[in-house]
Length: 100
Image (cartoon, rainbow, N blue to C red; front, side):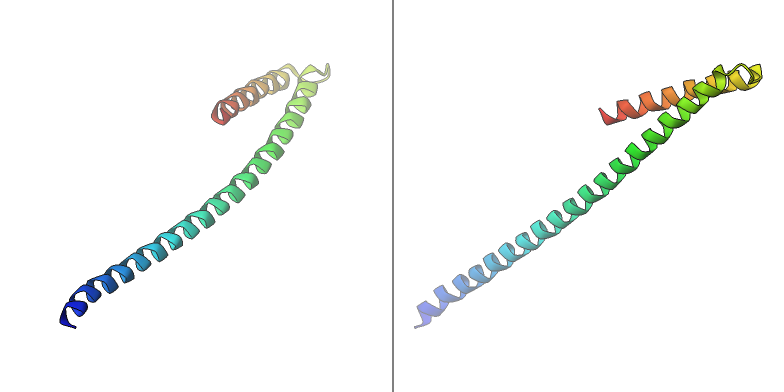
């Protein structure tokens, strides 16, 4: 009987330790999966925002192009509009580099 207790106690401790390790590993995996789902949702929302901003920039660029080419616009305004177009193009190129 005494030998059975000596063999049984370590086995019970080992079983409890293995169960605790399995449970904690499962909880970490669930937490990681939830964090990944949250990150993916935030990424999708940010990409939608980026697309909306790209459309707004394209519309602004078209408006500036129209403004700078109109004959009634003073020269300094047209030059400023052209510089702004160059800035917009530079920002778009930087954004495209970040996407890659």
